[in-house]
Length: 307
Ligand SMILES: NC(=O)c1ccc[n+]([C@@H]2O[C@H](COP(=O)([O-])OP(=O)(O)OC[C@H]3O[C@@H](n4cnc5c(N)ncnc54)[C@H](OP(=O)(O)O)[C@@H]3O)[C@@H](O)[C@H]2O)c1
Image 1 (cartoon, rainbow, N blue to C red):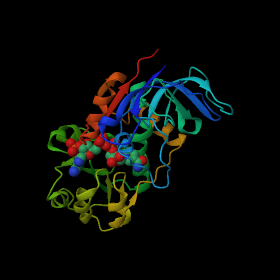
Image 2: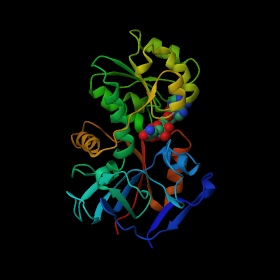
Image 3: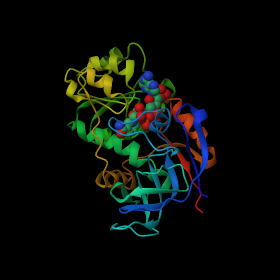
Image 4: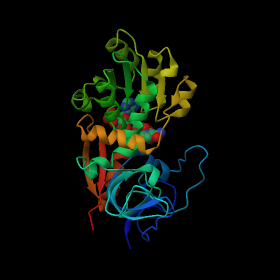
């Protein structure tokens, strides 16, 4: 039976297990995809710990990890137009991505440009798409100043590149070890931690026009004080704190148009996925621990060998 990595109960890492699961059968509107690569995201371990998006029912266990994949279509379900067996695709799976096979709803799948590797394409449906949605939501003019907290992680490196390309000055918080890494993206690096608001004020004497928060909690509380118009505070990490501060969660588009938009930018060399660690499927636990520790650099990807 095909291999997958997931959890059979909610809890800590001890709840995780390699699973033998039947090859999924595509329903109407779905693609069966042989996975080549899966992006690793914080939401993977958060779901294992019991997190659910507001209004969503408890998942049926076991759950296979992984919300972004790239791979090759094996079969198409009824009613699918525009995709055929053998197509290279990427998107947001419904049955988990840390697996040999997964199901993609056709509306959350896009064709992978030939110039984009499977590994890079697997970083786009969650991390780069969230970055894209947030930067577009803020709708800043060239010359504006944007603060990104947690700029050295998966969403942050993509958001920084998209904003810098749009002529926006980006100030980003990241641990000292990531200074060179984020400066290479054109970001003005700021150390996080106590005093961060004053460091931002010094770096932005003309003021800050928006904050894209990827950390939440106390880090967000302090840094929000630099922003007068709180309608320009968005977060992907902590909707409660942002809401209390007058901000809002990033509005995710979750559609093919955004997948195509980010992939086109990668193909054109305008957006680099910055995959810093690649693990085989049998090392999925190590890949997820790296992200769960909260200090990932760029993107972490699991590669699934072609059968
Ligand atoms: N709503 C959505 O659709 C959506 C989509 C994607 C992600 N998210 C959420 O957005 C957040 C970021 O995602 P991601 O994929 O970018 O995560 P990630 O790859 O783990 O990156 C998070 C970054 O934050 C930095 N960081 C951690 N603690 C910090 C602190 N106190 N101050 C400043 N920086 C700190 C980390 O490194 P250093 O500490 O070394 O700098 C790391 O680079 C997560 O909470 C994730 O669940 C939501």
